[in-house]
Amino acid sequence: MWSGRFREPLDADFEEWQRSITFDWRLLNEETAASKAHASALAAAGVLTSHELEVLRSALDAIAGQHSSDEGKAEVRNHSAAEDIHHFVELSLVKLVGPLGLKLHTGRSRNEQIATDLRLYVRGQIALVIESLAAWAGALVKQAHAAGDAVMPSYTHLQRAEPVLVAHWLLAYVEMALRDASRLQDCAARLNYCPLGSGAVAGATLALDRTIAARELGFTAPTANSMDATSDRDFVLEYLQALTLIGLHLSRFAEEITLFATAEFGFVALPEAFSTGSSAMPQKKNPDLTELIRAKVGRINGAAQAVTMQLKGLPLAYNKDMQETQEPAFQVDFVPRMIALVARFTAALQFNAERMNSAAQSGYLNAMAAATYLVHKGVPFRTAHEKIGNAVRYAIEKGVELGALTLDELHQFGDEFGEDFFPAVTLAATLDCHNVIGGTARTRVSTALAAATERIAALSAREATHAGA
Image (cartoon, rainbow, N blue to C red; front, side):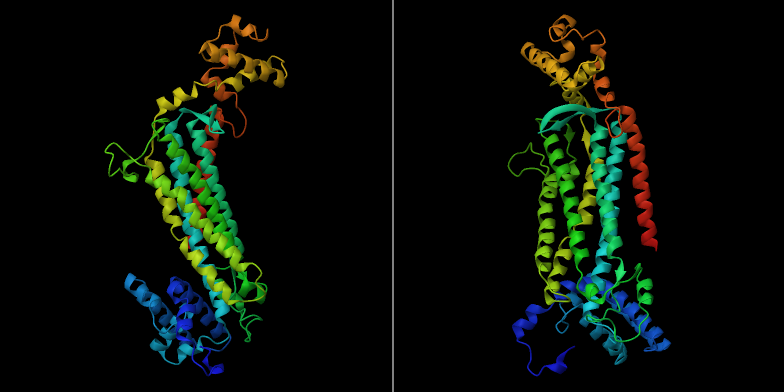
């Protein structure tokens, strides 16, 4: 591709070492699509005839189709002559249509080609991840509906804090999933500008209408600066950082399920279809899925850190260092499948409502509601906190819950206590006193559940529309 300037052959080991076809073969579909769009721009500029355009576009479709199978992909990956995916497509094109294939590279550079291909690839991966996130959020909402008014303890510092609806706990992860989807949508919107026509660094040397390729490939518009367009990999890093947050959220969910599935908690039964046994202990059912989920975030974050260091300190514009940003993007292609597995796993979970309900009614989880009762009696919260703290200590020494203390016993901590104290610290009252937007009061959770269902439906509809476009 560039042999005219050189008289000595490349060192054989260096030539093999610097080739990227061994990993950028994954960009075949993106490369053929971008090449077709470039051909359209060349035809509009009068460089190609309408017949030549038709021949080239048909040949590019054929190349993509011929290598869509596993065998075809292996042929691309192991090609002995091609340096990268761009070179492979050019060689294949020349093989199919002769010298006309060489004409396609008029007015473009590999620098803009890889910048375009990577954007198309990441955009496609984002769509797959969002689709999987919507499926997980949907499974969480379905479980929340099924949980009804089931109650569980919430935790701070991994110590029991206050009772919450199981649905409320599940909806916390729905918020994370929807937030993750929003981040990815933002990333997709920022990357959705077309580098084709940027040339090697300064812009194409032909008067190409850059909007033609941008429109054909579904980009918002052409990129605004050729130097930035050919050297920008922000979108790769942003994508990997967004995936890192997804991995963190999945890891938090996996950790809680792993804990809740232990005999010590007994809140949830692991689905057998997503668990394994022990080769030594016949009674074991191990949470392999959740344990692997916890571990995967390390690989995702490692990819993000690699790209961070690859981009640090690079001068404008394109540098060969940027070749190294491709593999980290490819190495996280397991994420959509991983989220889809978590969605099916979530749907198959079985909660022990009786065990969770029992846990939510022991350990003085109604202490906050008790302090709130005193606040309604005009007691300053700090004073109410102290009074209830003393009552809890007394109850601990006596071995009973707050609601089991007599009114006479409560009066030693304050004259404000009355018979209305006892209904104020029941499980239902303890839940419903959190009657604020985002709280665990039953009516609030019902409203939040309906809103989450609508948001997930809107997300799915939006992605379906984008996929159709």
